[in-house]
Structures are given as C-alpha cells and as structure tokens.
Length: 633
Image (cartoon, rainbow, N blue to C red):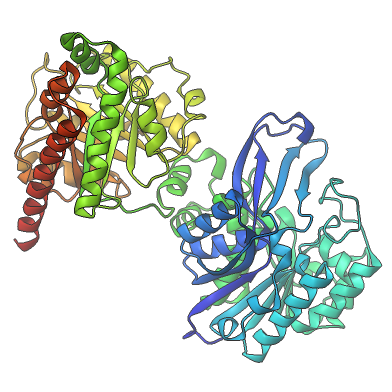
C-alpha cells in the first residue's frame, strides 16, 4: 500500500436516494410516511469512510435533479471528494423505497430503469485519478449490465495497473441482475447460473472479496458454504471475507478450512437489531478503516463488526454510520446497547460534521407579544407585522452582502408574523432559529402543547429550535420540576427530529440573583441530562463569562456555543473575550424605534432598511474590534 497517495479509497458505483418507511414492521404498501436518506451501497461506503476520516472519493453519476443534488451535497458535506460524480442530463438519479416488515423482512422497490449511476462511461474512469488512490471498492451490481460491466472492468484494469488495491462487495441483488421481476424484493437470494459464472470470472481481479453467506453461495454456485468458498478459491487468491450476520465475520487468507469455525472468526456484538438496512455498507466501511490504517485482519474485522452493531440499532440509511467518537465510546463500554444508551445517541448527533459557526450577527425578531403591542400602539392591523419583518430581514441580507459576511448572519423568527421570512430564508445558509415557547410563559409552556415532536416533523432541518425559559435554581420545587419536565420533553423531541436546540436562559426578576445564578441554572440543566446545541444569555461580567466557559468546557465540549443578547448598546467586550461566545443578537431595543416609525407611516421602506443596516453595521464593527483586541492580548 502506498500511504503517500492522495486518496485512501475510491468508491465506484451506486449513488441514489432512499426513502425509508418510518413505520417499522409495516408492509411497504401500508407505510404512510418516509424519511429521506443517501442511498446506494457505493455512496454509503464513500460516506461512511469519509466520516471515519479516510480520504475518500466517489466515482459515480447522478441525474440533473433535486435527488442528484442531494446525493452530491450529502457526500460533500461529509468530506467526500465528489469531483468525479458526473451529472447526467438525460437520466434520473436512482430511487429506492424500503420497508422493514416482520413478516416479509426488508422489502424494497427500486426505480433504476436507465438510471444515472448505471450509465457511467469510459471517460469517467480516468486512469490518472484512479492512480491517486490506495484502494478501489466496487460492488457486484456494477457488473450486472453490459454497459456498467464494461466500465467497471476498465476501472479494475486501470487500478490494478497502478498497484491500487481492489475490493469487491458481492452485493447480490436478484432484481438488478434481472433474475427476478422488479418489486419482488431484493432480500430473496435467488440462485442463478449466469450470475455465478459472471462472478467467478470477476473474482480473480480482486485483492479482497466480501459477501454474506448467501452471496458467497451464489458466487460459489453451491448451497454448501464451504464448497462455495472452495469454488471461489479456485478462481482467486484474494482474501475471502464472509459476513455472518449477528455471528460476526470469518476471514480466509489461504486454503479454505474444513469448518467455517476454523477460519479466523471475529464474533459480532450482542444487541438489538432494529434495522438491518445498511449493515453490509457499515461492515465494509469499518473493514476499510481498519485495514487501510494498518490493523491486522482480526482488528479490522472487529472494527467492521462494531460499525455494524451501531448501524443496525438505528432507523436510518447512510446517516446512521458512526463517527470515531461513537466507536471509541462503544468499545470502551464493552458494547453498550446502542438503542438504549442516550449518551451514544448524543455522540452520534454532535460528533458528525457540522457547519462551523462563529462571530454571528443575529436578529431577534421573534417576540410576538412585543410585536402585537407595537402594532396596537401604531394603530395598525397585525397584518402589517409580516411585511415589517420582511424588511428587517432585507436589511440583514444587504448587510451580509455589503460586508461579505457569508454564513455569519441569521435570525430568530417566529411563525406567527414571520412565516414568509422563514420560508424565504430556509435553505439559504443562514443561522436560522424558530421559537416554540408560549411568549412570556413561566412556568414554561410550549406552543401547541407537549406534543412538540409532532410539530417538528414539518420543520426544515436547518431551522434551529429556540426556547426562552425563565428558570432559577432556587425557585420553588414544583415550579422548577414543571419547567424541567417541559424542557426534557423538548430535548427528547429534537434528539428524534435531528434539529439543533437553542435555550435562552433568563433568571426571573422576582427572585434574588447574583453572579452565580445563571451558572447554577445552566449546571442544573446539564445535571438532568439536557445538552442544548446553543445557549443564549444576556450580557454578563467577565467573571461570570469565565465561569460559563469553564462549565461548558467541562460538561459539554461539543456545545456549539453561547450567543449574547444585546438589550441596547450593551458593552460586549466581556462576551468577545469569552471562549464559548459565538456571536450576538440584537432585538427590540435596537429595532423598536425604526419599526414603530415605519408602522406609523413616518418613514418609508428604504429609510427603515437604511436605519436598521446602520445599527447592524455599527454593532458588527464594534464586535469585530472587540474580538481583534482580545486576539492581540
């Protein structure tokens, strides 16, 4: 292996979109809702390898359609090189519907007729590009049609000519090999002499051949596993790896032994398998990570089995692939049950790649009570509040463009008067939050009641769930427990939905507070297992900021950061010196006067935008200067 090469792995083959039925146990025809995931074994392998830190590239083709753009964006966001994922202007991105039914096992309907990823052409398998990798992994499906067989064989030839290691995951799908009719289900491993002969002609060109017991039997042309392995060994000296499901895996480098138990056998992890979809992808990912980083086969097989144990415990596709932090924790706990361990679930959530956010300048325009009073004071209908918020956000967008602040602005916007703003801003790369609390409620109440999870189903994933809570560590027990119950329900909901959570903590004014009150309130929430992605606080003295910094570093090193609320020209020097502060909000104190003037009709749209821009740009300049001073001290 040439460790100095630019890439560790190139994954050639299927890249698709998968829609997984969310009703576990229901037949596909009975499913009522689906979750979208990256799909296609080759794309899942590329995604998982990149997540584990291997230098990975995807070699495939997608349609010129939203599904194709999703595939490319998902791979790129995980750090995968997508420079060789071509866009097909004529063919669609492949689509698969899947359901896990107790009666029928995994059932899938694949829409792959003349799909983009099976139309990779000769020019795509550039020899110079292939030579930059240490390993090339191809799935058996890529040899199932005449055209894809030709291109895949050409890629193999060019890879081997450049000493690139070659890995075959048999990945037998009778539907894609035209052994069974479309829609009959890919889990039925139907034998085919044609497929057997084709696979046997292929295996001699690979260094590693991987398959389930059923796939090995298909490739070997025998129902007896050992006879099938011996038949395959007659065509190749490759390392043969048999996936044994819950039993782990068996690895055979030389002669096939008399019993499978006599092979190098690495047991799997005990646990609950909620969803076997993706198990094979995860196995290859773990194996490649171990093998290409210098592990022996036993250790690599152990890592592969570990990846499988984590993925089958989750109801997801490629996104279920583990991160290095998850693997380390899981192994250190000797295989804690993944579906029962909240810390493991949280690690999966917070150690995946996330867009860096720092020096954020944010608008807080979500105070519905303030908005209503503003309209009433101006004597105008509430309908005027929606265009007001659109103008405020327009001022923020113009500021972003003028100061080149891409990715460093955003807003907290309600859906009562700001629904159009939310619709327009979603998907644009802004930091965007949306409140869920009943304004001013103490104890905390959530809009729509406690069934917050049902509301979040309809929220775009890039909208952050925001909640303002007036909480004091010394408030009466019954009041504190009510608030904590609500917050716990909210936290469970975002863990399920995948949204980030912002908690703005405000100690109520009717109780005495000192410099430690806020710190103790945050610590209490950590103690009951609530770890928001973001905290929001009012301006504080430097000593309190240091305590908050230390607490977050100790209790939640994965916290995205703290945002400080500017109540009107506050001195933010202490916030700028904080290790955990990532930016600031300006809200009603800054925006009230120009907003009231616009509602009263004394200024026009352009004047409102100009005045808001001036306030924003002044605050941005002050923040940047404060940050710069801290950087030089």
